[in-house]
Image (cartoon, rainbow over all chains, first blue to last red; front, top):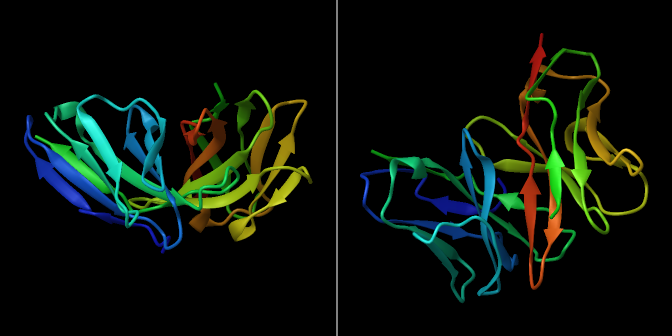
Length: 113
Length: 115
């Protein structure tokens, strides 16, 4: 158990809909990262937050947004969903130091029909 | 930008034999390198990291990795493979930007250990 909690574990929705994925980091970790894992794209970095502030951005679509709340949990919002958004979405946390490893949640599997 | 490459999609070894999963990196500045493992339907788990110091890094589950600066490689090794080592392995590098940093992952190498 990594200590990172993601909900929901599975989500099935239709194209055009909006979903919210939630992540609770390990106790004491200030940094939260979101990744998308799909079969053809591998593990893609989306965005990083540190203590409530956005710190780094990857190839995150404009239809996607995220935030980190004062209690350090984070949410990833995916809107106007397309079939290609079907993937496994991972949240990871770290203490925030440059040399720290990431601790991953079990992921949220999104299926867009 | 920092990047890592895993040249093999798949590695097959027999149980009890040594295993190597290859990784090469491209960085500007000091390399911060990591290995992670992913079992089916699970999140990634940290195995080991190289930050500085000894080129041979020891990690979890008997794995180790050798940092080679001249060859820009960071290969993952284990002296004796177990069937339970069968999983997807990712090499990763820390990419430091302005104000923050991200971890960039390789495409992954699937390891099959045959009994």
